[in-house]
Amino acid sequence: MNAVSCNGEPVDAGLLDAALVNYGHFTSLQVRAGAVQGWALHLRRLQQGTRELFDAELDEARLLDWLRQALVARGMQDASLRITVFSRAFDFRQPLRAVPVDVLVSVAAPATVPGQARAVLPVCYQRELPQLKHAGTLPLFQQRRLAMRRGFDDALFVDAAGRISEGSTWNIALLAGTEVIWPRAEALRGTAEQLLIAGLERLGQAQAWREVPLDALGGFRAAVACNATGMWPLARIGDCRFADSEALLGQLRHALAQTPWQPL
Image (tube, rainbow, N blue to C red; front, side, top):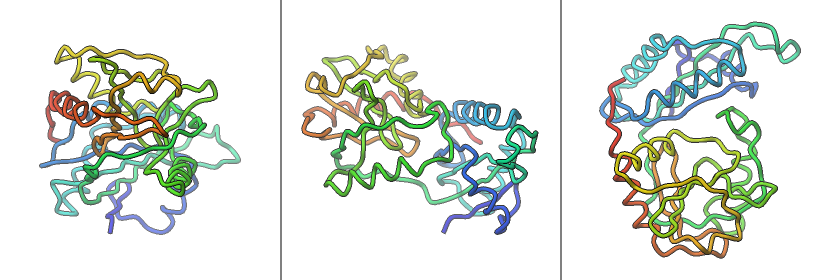
Protein backbone atom coordinates (compact mmCIF):
# COMPACT_ATOMS: atom_id res chain seq x y z
CA MET A 1 0.00 0.00 0.00
CA ASN A 2 1.14 3.56 -0.73
CA ALA A 3 1.41 6.02 2.15
CA VAL A 4 -0.05 9.43 1.25
CA SER A 5 0.27 12.74 3.06
CA CYS A 6 -0.79 16.28 2.15
CA ASN A 7 0.98 19.35 3.54
CA GLY A 8 2.64 16.99 6.01
CA GLU A 9 -0.67 15.57 7.32
CA PRO A 10 -2.35 12.19 6.67
CA VAL A 11 -4.86 12.35 3.84
CA ASP A 12 -8.60 12.15 4.49
CA ALA A 13 -11.40 11.42 2.04
CA GLY A 14 -12.16 15.12 1.55
CA LEU A 15 -8.63 15.82 0.38
CA LEU A 16 -8.72 12.93 -2.03
CA ASP A 17 -11.94 14.25 -3.54
CA ALA A 18 -10.23 17.58 -4.24
CA ALA A 19 -7.08 15.93 -5.58
CA LEU A 20 -9.07 13.88 -8.06
CA VAL A 21 -10.75 16.88 -9.71
CA ASN A 22 -8.06 16.47 -12.40
CA TYR A 23 -6.68 20.00 -12.12
CA GLY A 24 -3.11 19.82 -10.92
CA HIS A 25 0.36 18.68 -11.82
CA PHE A 26 3.03 16.40 -10.41
CA THR A 27 6.51 14.99 -10.58
CA SER A 28 7.80 11.53 -9.73
CA LEU A 29 11.28 10.69 -8.49
CA GLN A 30 13.35 7.94 -6.99
CA VAL A 31 15.05 8.16 -3.60
CA ARG A 32 18.02 6.01 -2.68
CA ALA A 33 19.66 6.22 0.74
CA GLY A 34 17.70 9.44 1.31
CA ALA A 35 19.17 11.07 -1.81
CA VAL A 36 17.87 11.97 -5.28
CA GLN A 37 19.27 12.82 -8.68
CA GLY A 38 18.26 16.05 -10.37
CA TRP A 39 16.23 17.61 -7.57
CA ALA A 40 16.66 21.04 -9.15
CA LEU A 41 14.96 19.75 -12.32
CA HIS A 42 12.03 18.35 -10.36
CA LEU A 43 11.69 21.59 -8.43
CA ARG A 44 11.79 23.64 -11.63
CA ARG A 45 9.02 21.44 -13.08
CA LEU A 46 6.90 21.88 -9.95
CA GLN A 47 7.41 25.64 -9.89
CA GLN A 48 6.59 25.96 -13.58
CA GLY A 49 3.36 24.00 -13.21
CA THR A 50 2.32 25.89 -10.09
CA ARG A 51 2.82 29.25 -11.78
CA GLU A 52 1.01 28.16 -14.93
CA LEU A 53 -2.00 26.51 -13.25
CA PHE A 54 -2.35 28.58 -10.06
CA ASP A 55 -0.30 31.79 -10.48
CA ALA A 56 1.45 30.83 -7.25
CA GLU A 57 4.88 29.82 -5.95
CA LEU A 58 5.98 26.80 -3.94
CA ASP A 59 8.08 27.13 -0.80
CA GLU A 60 11.05 24.84 -1.45
CA ALA A 61 12.06 24.58 2.22
CA ARG A 62 8.56 23.50 3.30
CA LEU A 63 8.34 21.09 0.39
CA LEU A 64 11.61 19.42 1.36
CA ASP A 65 10.44 19.19 4.98
CA TRP A 66 7.27 17.42 3.84
CA LEU A 67 9.27 14.97 1.71
CA ARG A 68 11.62 14.13 4.58
CA GLN A 69 8.69 13.80 6.96
CA ALA A 70 6.90 11.42 4.58
CA LEU A 71 9.98 9.21 4.28
CA VAL A 72 10.56 9.15 8.04
CA ALA A 73 6.88 8.31 8.69
CA ARG A 74 7.20 5.32 6.36
CA GLY A 75 10.63 4.38 7.70
CA MET A 76 12.07 4.33 4.18
CA GLN A 77 15.37 5.58 2.78
CA ASP A 78 14.82 3.92 -0.61
CA ALA A 79 11.48 4.85 -2.14
CA SER A 80 9.43 6.17 -5.03
CA LEU A 81 8.00 9.63 -4.41
CA ARG A 82 5.19 11.38 -6.25
CA ILE A 83 4.61 15.05 -5.48
CA THR A 84 1.23 16.35 -6.65
CA VAL A 85 0.32 20.04 -6.54
CA PHE A 86 -3.39 20.89 -6.54
CA SER A 87 -5.80 23.06 -4.56
CA ARG A 88 -8.68 22.07 -2.34
CA ALA A 89 -10.08 25.56 -2.96
CA PHE A 90 -9.97 25.43 -6.77
CA ASP A 91 -13.38 25.99 -8.34
CA PHE A 92 -13.69 25.20 -12.04
CA ARG A 93 -16.54 27.70 -12.23
CA GLN A 94 -14.15 30.47 -11.18
CA PRO A 95 -10.75 29.27 -12.42
CA LEU A 96 -9.16 32.74 -12.23
CA ARG A 97 -9.84 33.11 -8.51
CA ALA A 98 -6.63 33.09 -6.48
CA VAL A 99 -6.41 29.94 -4.33
CA PRO A 100 -3.81 28.45 -2.00
CA VAL A 101 -2.06 25.35 -3.32
CA ASP A 102 -1.80 22.01 -1.57
CA VAL A 103 0.96 19.43 -1.87
CA LEU A 104 0.20 15.71 -1.86
CA VAL A 105 3.16 13.40 -1.19
CA SER A 106 2.90 9.70 -2.00
CA VAL A 107 5.57 7.26 -0.80
CA ALA A 108 5.84 3.81 -2.35
CA ALA A 109 8.40 1.06 -2.80
CA PRO A 110 11.42 1.82 -4.98
CA ALA A 111 10.65 1.37 -8.66
CA THR A 112 12.47 -1.08 -10.87
CA VAL A 113 12.26 -1.52 -14.63
CA PRO A 114 12.30 -4.91 -16.38
CA GLY A 115 15.62 -5.69 -17.96
CA GLN A 116 14.27 -7.19 -21.16
CA ALA A 117 13.97 -5.15 -24.33
CA ARG A 118 10.47 -4.00 -25.23
CA ALA A 119 8.42 -3.59 -28.36
CA VAL A 120 6.35 -0.41 -28.75
CA LEU A 121 3.56 0.55 -31.12
CA PRO A 122 3.72 3.93 -32.90
CA VAL A 123 0.37 5.72 -32.61
CA CYS A 124 -0.80 9.13 -33.79
CA TYR A 125 -1.34 11.09 -30.59
CA GLN A 126 -0.32 14.47 -29.17
CA ARG A 127 -0.18 15.01 -25.42
CA GLU A 128 -2.35 17.90 -24.19
CA LEU A 129 -0.22 20.79 -22.82
CA PRO A 130 2.97 18.79 -23.32
CA GLN A 131 5.11 21.32 -21.44
CA LEU A 132 3.34 20.37 -18.18
CA LYS A 133 3.38 17.08 -16.30
CA HIS A 134 -0.28 17.56 -15.48
CA ALA A 135 -2.83 15.23 -13.90
CA GLY A 136 -4.64 14.47 -17.16
CA THR A 137 -3.07 11.04 -17.65
CA LEU A 138 -6.09 9.03 -18.86
CA PRO A 139 -5.21 9.25 -22.60
CA LEU A 140 -1.63 8.17 -21.93
CA PHE A 141 -2.65 5.02 -20.12
CA GLN A 142 -5.40 4.28 -22.61
CA GLN A 143 -2.91 4.45 -25.49
CA ARG A 144 -0.65 2.04 -23.59
CA ARG A 145 -3.61 -0.28 -22.98
CA LEU A 146 -4.60 -0.29 -26.65
CA ALA A 147 -1.02 -1.02 -27.69
CA MET A 148 -0.83 -3.94 -25.27
CA ARG A 149 -4.05 -5.34 -26.72
CA ARG A 150 -2.19 -5.55 -30.03
CA GLY A 151 0.70 -7.48 -28.49
CA PHE A 152 3.07 -4.58 -27.80
CA ASP A 153 4.48 -3.44 -24.46
CA ASP A 154 3.68 0.27 -24.79
CA ALA A 155 2.84 3.12 -27.16
CA LEU A 156 5.15 5.62 -28.86
CA PHE A 157 3.50 8.88 -29.90
CA VAL A 158 3.78 10.30 -33.41
CA ASP A 159 2.44 13.80 -34.10
CA ALA A 160 0.23 14.92 -36.99
CA ALA A 161 3.33 15.69 -39.07
CA GLY A 162 4.54 12.09 -38.70
CA ARG A 163 7.34 12.94 -36.26
CA ILE A 164 8.22 10.83 -33.22
CA SER A 165 7.68 12.80 -30.01
CA GLU A 166 7.63 10.65 -26.84
CA GLY A 167 6.33 7.48 -25.26
CA SER A 168 3.28 7.18 -23.03
CA THR A 169 5.25 8.06 -19.88
CA TRP A 170 8.81 8.24 -21.18
CA ASN A 171 11.21 9.91 -23.56
CA ILE A 172 13.23 8.18 -26.24
CA ALA A 173 16.88 8.32 -27.28
CA LEU A 174 18.04 6.98 -30.65
CA LEU A 175 21.47 6.14 -32.01
CA ALA A 176 22.56 7.11 -35.53
CA GLY A 177 26.13 5.98 -36.18
CA THR A 178 27.89 7.11 -33.00
CA GLU A 179 25.60 10.09 -32.34
CA VAL A 180 22.76 10.05 -29.79
CA ILE A 181 19.64 11.63 -31.28
CA TRP A 182 16.84 13.23 -29.28
CA PRO A 183 13.63 13.58 -31.35
CA ARG A 184 12.59 17.19 -31.77
CA ALA A 185 8.81 17.54 -31.44
CA GLU A 186 6.28 18.78 -28.89
CA ALA A 187 6.69 16.54 -25.83
CA LEU A 188 7.10 16.56 -22.08
CA ARG A 189 10.83 16.96 -21.57
CA GLY A 190 11.55 14.53 -18.76
CA THR A 191 14.00 14.98 -15.92
CA ALA A 192 15.79 11.75 -16.89
CA GLU A 193 16.22 13.00 -20.45
CA GLN A 194 17.73 16.25 -19.16
CA LEU A 195 20.14 14.40 -16.85
CA LEU A 196 21.22 12.16 -19.71
CA ILE A 197 21.82 15.13 -22.00
CA ALA A 198 23.98 16.76 -19.32
CA GLY A 199 25.86 13.51 -18.67
CA LEU A 200 26.57 12.90 -22.35
CA GLU A 201 27.85 16.45 -22.64
CA ARG A 202 30.24 15.90 -19.73
CA LEU A 203 31.52 12.75 -21.41
CA GLY A 204 32.02 14.53 -24.72
CA GLN A 205 29.55 12.22 -26.47
CA ALA A 206 28.11 13.52 -29.71
CA GLN A 207 24.37 14.19 -29.52
CA ALA A 208 21.85 16.18 -31.52
CA TRP A 209 18.19 17.22 -31.62
CA ARG A 210 16.46 16.37 -34.88
CA GLU A 211 13.01 15.88 -36.25
CA VAL A 212 12.61 12.12 -36.62
CA PRO A 213 9.92 11.03 -39.08
CA LEU A 214 8.47 7.63 -38.28
CA ASP A 215 9.46 6.34 -41.72
CA ALA A 216 13.12 7.27 -41.03
CA LEU A 217 13.56 4.82 -38.15
CA GLY A 218 15.39 2.37 -40.39
CA GLY A 219 18.39 4.70 -40.29
CA PHE A 220 18.95 4.21 -36.55
CA ARG A 221 20.93 1.50 -34.79
CA ALA A 222 19.38 1.60 -31.33
CA ALA A 223 16.57 2.99 -29.20
CA VAL A 224 16.24 3.41 -25.43
CA ALA A 225 13.32 4.64 -23.32
CA CYS A 226 13.92 6.70 -20.18
CA ASN A 227 11.97 8.26 -17.33
CA ALA A 228 12.44 8.91 -13.62
CA THR A 229 12.06 5.20 -12.80
CA GLY A 230 14.93 4.15 -15.05
CA MET A 231 15.85 3.15 -18.60
CA TRP A 232 15.12 0.16 -20.78
CA PRO A 233 16.11 -0.90 -24.30
CA LEU A 234 13.64 -0.95 -27.18
CA ALA A 235 13.97 -3.98 -29.42
CA ARG A 236 11.30 -2.87 -31.86
CA ILE A 237 9.17 0.12 -32.85
CA GLY A 238 6.36 -1.20 -34.98
CA ASP A 239 8.10 -3.38 -37.55
CA CYS A 240 11.48 -1.64 -37.21
CA ARG A 241 14.01 -3.64 -35.17
CA PHE A 242 17.16 -2.39 -33.43
CA ALA A 243 20.30 -4.49 -32.98
CA ASP A 244 22.32 -2.24 -30.67
CA SER A 245 19.85 -1.01 -28.04
CA GLU A 246 21.65 -2.82 -25.20
CA ALA A 247 24.90 -1.05 -26.11
CA LEU A 248 23.16 2.34 -26.13
CA LEU A 249 21.60 1.51 -22.76
CA GLY A 250 25.07 0.94 -21.28
CA GLN A 251 26.27 4.23 -22.71
CA LEU A 252 23.33 6.11 -21.23
CA ARG A 253 23.78 4.48 -17.83
CA HIS A 254 27.35 5.79 -17.84
CA ALA A 255 26.03 9.25 -18.71
CA LEU A 256 23.43 9.18 -15.93
CA ALA A 257 26.12 8.21 -13.41
CA GLN A 258 27.79 11.59 -14.06
CA THR A 259 25.08 13.24 -11.90
CA PRO A 260 25.66 12.72 -8.15
CA TRP A 261 22.88 11.76 -5.77
CA GLN A 262 22.06 14.64 -3.40
CA PRO A 263 20.56 14.20 0.07
CA LEU A 264 17.04 15.60 0.37
